[in-house]
Image (spheres, rainbow, N blue to C red):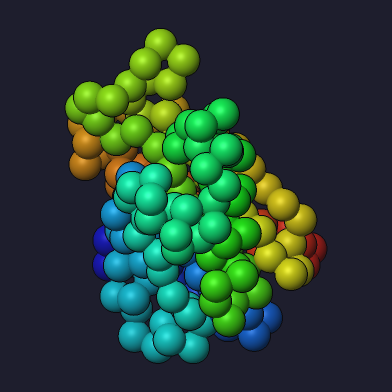
Length: 166
């Protein structure tokens, strides 16, 4: 079992234990986190759906991200990640949502937001809002893999923290 499968299995156990469904909104990872989850037999018990919203238009149309948020903060921002997660939650039957938006490279970075910058948000009916920005290194594949692993890990950690199971 690879690292993503192991992390997805751990997350699945935490969600199933609580009777929660998860939804994901992914940009730079292109559905990699959802793929890791759906590779687990029985994941339909705890995974509702995933949104791959690579373009700004998709973020607006599918997740109700405000165009002013994208214009003001950019697609790679905690503000956009937050609106993506909230939109995924509202457009699903899930109780927990996670989002990922970033710059996987090799181009597209800037001084303020270099390649490897990835923003995350977690929201839920039973979780406090969580956002963060990480900087990952390596090539495009490595950055996407690290972002996926971070999301799966952070979701499980937040579920366990909320329930005092650290």
